[in-house]
Length: 268
Image (cartoon, rainbow, N blue to C red):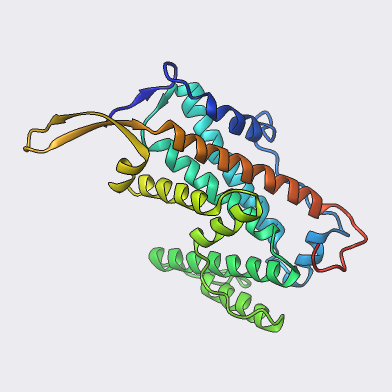
């Protein structure tokens, strides 16, 4: 595996994404998306969901995406080095984060958006329960509950609201849907996410589909060592998709968090 020095190679295609994320950077932190106004579409969505509304999840997902982009920014501008895997891994995380936020904001009506929010909360509590099982967490506080108990509460709420069937959400499905509503090619965006996931998991196939092989050398065990670098065209497409989803999230969140007299319309 070969690494490339970003001081020598042109990685200016990252600049639009870095600048878009940089708009939310404070001195020592990232600014959170604002709390939605009382008479806003988001508040109308979340009103019957109690503590498990979509606004919190959108804010959290958006912030996580910004932090992934920030890590890549420092890798490029401070460390000055890009290896063939790390940028894909970081952009894969950012893409999932921004796509999740878009998916929560852009359901076709209020019931669908509420169902999506409860689906993610149920999955969040399922994952929490898995961790609690691994570490043998014991409930001690008088009001503390396990992840499994919270998951049951979310499912019960969904049933009461006529929104049953909180199936585990698939990241690929979320990305496909979010890309569609954000005006991206959904198949291409999902394919780029698959490449990022492949690199993150140390798989072999992304090297063949998203890298430029610049040579090989015979290894000591009789095999060959590949000398490869990132495919800039595909990595640029991934960065562009992250930027599009970031900007779409911000635009939709601002529009849906403002006070409005039209909150009774389920499309808003």
